[in-house]
Image (tube, rainbow, N blue to C red):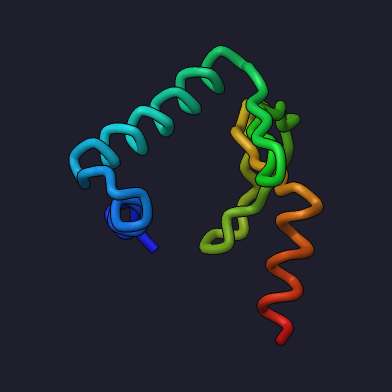
Length: 95
């Protein structure tokens, strides 16, 4: 599913025009990105939590040359899915 598919579904189910729906979806995505750039956590009850996690420096291996490479510490965005979301997906897919 792509962003345009999401816009189409929301637009048809709410009666809002596709242009307005696209603006809302784009605004939501930009807000999440900007908040995470500031290190903020975003909680959407029943969906999950977006947060920034610090990954420690580690040693990896280049599979092509088998040479060790140091991967520096970095901050990465993560999404932790809610328990309700997980169970709903599990029940639906396992049927």
